[in-house]
Length: 439
Image (cartoon, rainbow, N blue to C red):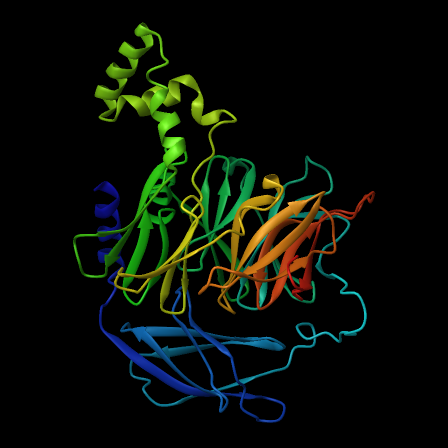
């Protein structure tokens, strides 16, 4: 209930409108004025997007608001942004300039070679995130005593802007991408919302409670619907909910649980000595929770080799909500109103060697494709999941061993890597995903 109230207050403060309008226009190549097809047109800081057709034409439905910022991206072209006001109702005309760094020459008969995008011997890249046609980088100096920095870089490796992370924030850990597509920097003692304005990076304080209750639970939004969960790593059951903009009551979408693990979880109370059972009941009454939850925490069961947190991610693919329930072995499809349309069996997460499965599904936001992540003998593998059938379309093996911070965009896999037996710092690489038949 507290989470629901926070989400409602957040929506009220943001003044999200339920009315929509349609923006229309054409996208052309700046060099030859030919129409560009499959250009990704996205409302800034939103999951709303559309694509151009063979004539370069697009129609994008957006919520009514005083102004808009549309971001146009296309493989091989520099991203463009367009600022619009509510009164701009005419056709939009956009031209995009070819970008040689996004469209390198490839010998189709040769082995795929990773591209080095960003890196210098005097700093190491710890994490990265995408921002339009640029990167936001989390870096540290060559020596551990040197300060952490955020850098804004283009695809050619040019550093556009750098800023130090305040020491009071504690050790920076990683980036978190919220449901709007925004970047959040998680540090040991502080959270920051990272924003880019006029090629300058800005850090805005984000309270931990606000992040935990208003940002992290929301997995995605689509057509005025918000999809969130009450997931807790130390309990083997959680629910997904859907909340329609303007409504005050959420609806349960799907319950996720591991039945066998739940049985073991509940048995922990029975194994406690009498004195600890009494303490578990006292703490359960104090915290208004179940005694079995307290018992599992007291016994250390949730930190043992017998316990594994639930992993059943939610993704929006076009107008379909997909929940990959790796515990029931089904992929569930819902429409935007939260109605179950069908379910299909999945088995990719049960390889011959169970430890190969990394419990990680990645989404290419631009191409709307899903990839399951596997690792064996230090090599990383990506298997493309058919979002309709749950079957594997193909597999791709990364060229570099021990790649870290793997992310996917526009058919490329991006990652951080330090070459084997090298003093070189960690650089940012990418490889074009070329699928082969999965064995």
